[in-house]
Structure formats: C-alpha cells, structure tokens
Length: 332
Ligand code: PEP
Ligand code: MN
Image (cartoon, rainbow, N blue to C red; front, side, top):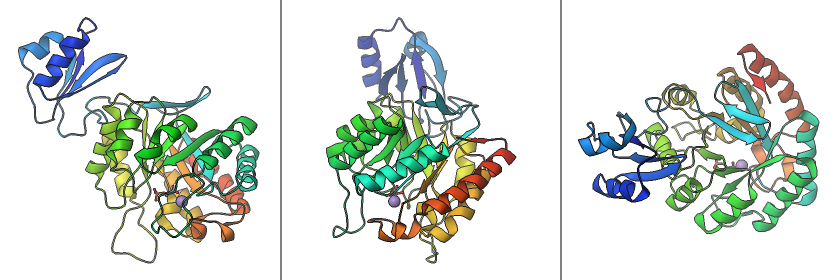
C-alpha cells in the first residue's frame, strides 16, 4: 500500500507510522509511506494523515500503473526528456569501455556528427573473468568528464559495485547499473539517494517481477528517475549470447510507469545481428536504445565481437530514424 502523506504531517509523525506499519518512508516533494503490498486496508490513523492511498497487487508498487497510470518523464538535459508523452526514442552509443582519450574522443565525435546526445562507456567493468581488462576506473571517468565538457554530451557510465558508487554518481549524468550488479543493494540504495537518472539493466537470470522490484529499491529511496533496460536473458539457446526478451518489454510497457530502454548489443553479442535487432526494438515504440560502437571493434578491450564500427553505426542510424517515424516516435 502506498500512502502519500498530507503536508501537515511532521517528519516525527511520519517516522512513527513508518515504524508501526513496518514501511519504507521517503520524501520527494511529499512524504510517502510504502508498506508491504499484503496490507489491503488502511486503519483510521493512516486515513487521517493520508492525502492519497493506493492499494497495490504486488510489491511492484511505485513502479506500477496502479500508482501512476502514465509513463514517467525523465529529464536527461535541460532540453531533453524521455518517457511521458514525448514519443522520443533516445539513442545512446559509445564503446563498451573507455580505453584511451583518442578512442573516447573519436566516439564522442561520432555522437556529435549524428546528433546523438548521450555518450556511453564503462570505466568500471563487471567482467566475467578477473584476468581481462577491468576498465580504467577513475581515469576513465575523468576522460568521460572531459568529453562532456568538450562536446556538450551527456554521459552514461556504469557502477560495478558500491565501493565506487559515489564516484560514478558524481561523474555520470545517467548512472548505469549493470546486469550483474542489479542485485547489489549497496548500489541500489545509493542510487535512491540521488536524483540523477538511473538506467537499471535486467539481470540475465532475473524475472520481470524481480527486475522491477530492484527498481523499487531506488524509487523507494526517493529517486523517481529510473529507466528499465532489457539486455537479454539466458535461455537454452547458445548460438546467440543471450535472448532479447521482447515479450518482457511488452509487459514492462503495459505494467509499469517507467521508461524502457533496449540494448540489442549485449543481447545478441555479435555485431552482424545488431542492426536487425535494433530495428525490431525501435519498431516496438521504446524510449531508448543502447548500442555499442567502437572506432575499431577488432581491437576493443571488452565486448569486441558485438560492437559496430562507425560506418555500420552511421548506416544503422539512418534506418532507425525511419523505423521510429513509422511507429510515431522520433529518434533523438
Ligand atoms: C555493458 O553495458 O557494457 C555491460 C557490461 O552490460 P551488461 O551489464 O548488460 O552485461
Ligand atoms: Mn559491453
């Protein structure tokens, strides 16, 4: 149950109710209590202080359509929002990892050339093997910061674990939480305490319910700016790296109030399939698309097989704009 409290309720009163009902209390313009969804009836003490009470079916509460019936709008930049009724499909691209100034500068220039506003690259990489490139860490964040200043781009980069969460939150315009990190409560809770947009990726063995419940940790920390990213789940199939769950995307669009971003690159894992898959994603009418691109994928230090070279990306970008227009969206 979600209880939005009247303005006259003091923080002390709210705290006492939070304890009594074993609920989460957060503040974002107003004080909000969220109890377990098992609570189906409000007692008089709650009714007295409530401006609004929403009974919910499951612990998908703040992210659910019962609470907010329309899709949330998330402000990325002064002149750029996604979600709501903007009908924008935002393009996010860049290499898997920041590798050098030369490499990330080339990636930033590609964004500027195509009018792409959000540059993406990881500095803290959650690799499968400890013996591979782990990312440039803080030096990588500083290079991304330099690109933001030089080209006026917005930066999305991932937080791998909570030891450097504050650092990433400080440097990023959008914080990415990766598929392997989405259960890290240290990260989720820290992201709940900022107002910066968060792109939360679905773990490859995560049900839709668990995925959205991870988003609830951020939302119930007080950060309303959460986007969900489907990036492929593990199935019996081994010919492709993962299986992009487009049925799940339809469900997320139907059942949640959060913008949905799709990542075809990590889903298929091979560059040959990314353009077709990306067009299929855009055809669903989604809020954004994350595609890995690299000036020279052959020598990429992570995810080499799936990154598009710049000419492949340029070509794809033209066709994505056409597909987006066909379904009433604008590629931005
Ligand atoms: C990435 O975005 O480069 C990445 C590691 O993705 P995921 O968390 O989806 O595996
Ligand atoms: Mn990657």
